[in-house]
Image 1 (cartoon, one colour):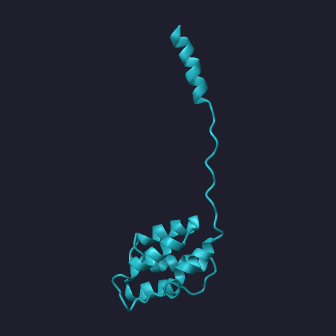
Image 2 (image 1 turned 90 degrees about the vertical axis):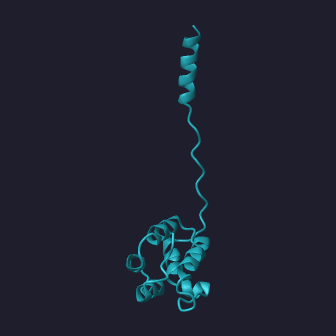
Image 3 (image 1 turned 60 degrees about the vertical axis):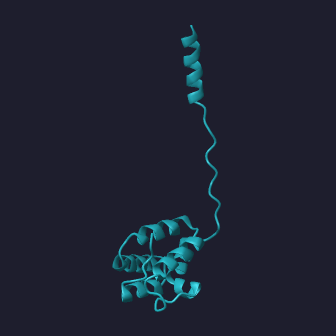
Length: 120
């Protein structure tokens, strides 16, 4: 008899619905804004690839991680950071052109020196 009472109760518990998770707050930063920031990072962050060519990639990555909050921008930065320098330059330049950014100094810098790419 106890088994009969437990089964319907457990079925009723499994059918209850929970409220959807709250939406992530939006900051208003668009993907294009994130790409502009990425392309122009050296000027915005006061960085120079000539000063420290070995550490510039890490500095760029840290600066962008603190400032890019558009979900698509975060995803793109993360995906591109695991690629090699040549692929990073190509992907960043292509994405910049896709969103209407004509020049991308970051892609140019990475391509010119094969160093300074974003790090994961």
